[in-house]
Image (cartoon, rainbow, N blue to C red; front, side, top):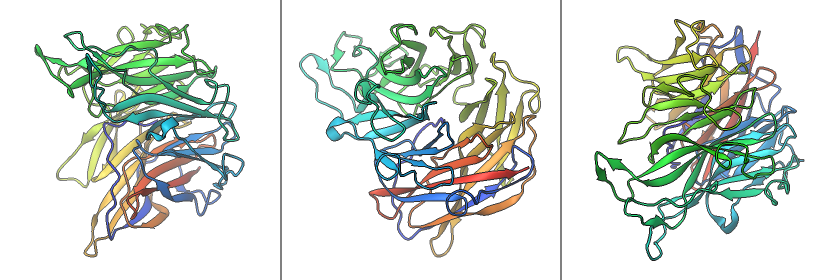
Length: 471
């Protein structure tokens, strides 16, 4: 699952050819990485015409039988282990999610449970509305939205009655300092996870009112959000045994602009989440850990929190032992072809794992103009980083872009570069977007997904590639 500060809009760019190749940098396991020829066509699958609407990037998840589910925008596809579309899913291998009324949907999370049911999470987007009498205007935003589909791609009637849930998690509409109330709550879902009991943990943001900066109350649209964790039962209702009526506040106010988050559950079904501090108060970014009842787990960090210097986390991943990998922000060196990104590993109790790298941290060396979009823990206690490298234009206007794969071993050691591992694909027109997602499957293979803009401004494409590590 990916954590991002913001999202670039899709935009068509004329007369561009995007060359997608795989550049292999320091690897997380011994052996050569190569495109898996048993997957798709030469190790890759491409979808070149997906209807464009606001999304936070491609998402990929693995089912219990190894089939891959790819979500982007409002389109969700399922692939067999060999990369072929699974025609037994939905309509010829795909479904289209559509909130009632035709409102746009922004995807932010995708998960598959042990029964093969597909959970799609995001936000139903709404435009700003004029206020009713004695109410403040509702800013542009939306409501947290979840869909669940059975293994065959039909809506799951056991999930909130029809497989669709649009919710404000029981929150009231916020009020301003003078007591005036907004017309309705505004919530945005930022990430989702499923625990071993099939319960659904979500991280969401809710509008809580105006920001008070140094005694000055700023007016709309300078608002502030608060981050919450909620847990739903398998049937989609708020779990009353968790927090306050099914939700727990992270107690950190966050700024509205560009704030995302991350949530996952460990082997003991405890939610761990990243809460990002906002502007004005400069609240720190912090990792939080809750117990199964929704209370802060005081054995983690300091009283349930592990504070991190503000905006010093680019992504996060958790391994099967509950250890956390934190990818730091880029450290650029003007005289070098490479930039450095630090990776720290924390133990399950939030302390720095000093057995990793040098005193708990190691560095990834990445080429300049690369963007890491997802951090993935592997099956050997190491970590992978996937993203995009954007090249410069040549005299004909051609711009090349490449998937970038880098990694560290379980000991935090950097592996030597192994050169090119094959061309992924080419597309006519457009640029690759920095919205990758990835996973390590049950066989230890690395799966990478990425969006790119197309020549037609109403569509975009997705590339899905699988890489094997030759031991």
